[in-house]
Image 1 (spheres, rainbow, N blue to C red):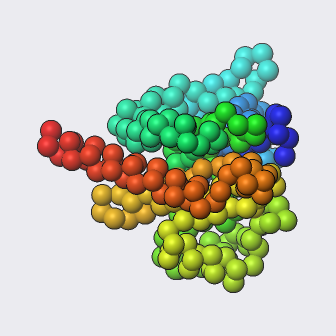
Image 2 (cartoon, rainbow, N blue to C red):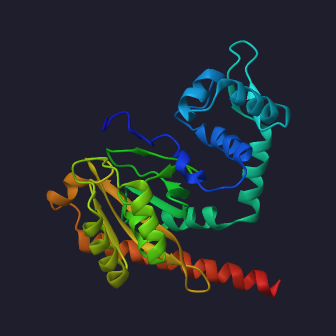
Length: 278
């Protein structure tokens, strides 16, 4: 990890679309999912190589997305970027779903107690999708944005969300993902992951000790919706050396993560209540 320039999230996981019935739609979604803050522009041949799709097929799909307004084309370089229709959908999502802004306010209210990074995420197929992010003022930055994705078994956020899914979902995740290694600390043994899953279900928190990035640790806690289901989770990320240097204490971070999650739950309930009354 480069602690000065930050950490970039990995490319979109095209496995998220496995099993969907319409192949052309799958490929179009994969194309849109490939754009990121790290890679905001793509050429036709680059997309084809990235996704393993024939360039002529990519050209047809990209042209359709461009004509529909979901992609824009630079007339000089002929590369493509996300178009205004995507912004419209993102703006609509933000308007109809107050949760990201709500969570961000909760995060801000705790920055006097924890000055590093806060995340809220949910599980979409076999990826964690960030819903809200607050970057801290500490020396290490993890560069992510709302809508970005990260791994499941290598993050505290992901492990919490995975633990509260049904066992058959977890079995499929392990079988299909093969538990890839990101760092020497990553869990690659299914038996060890199951041990952590059972512990997370009992204790209602998860710990990531350098399993996604060597220098970064995190603690995660579940967020329950109004029906008591764990549909989201929060995590607090920090430089690992602060734990080993005793500047931060895991028991205090776990307590704080659960407190932040509990406040988000309370505000979700309040928001739903007010909506029902209105």
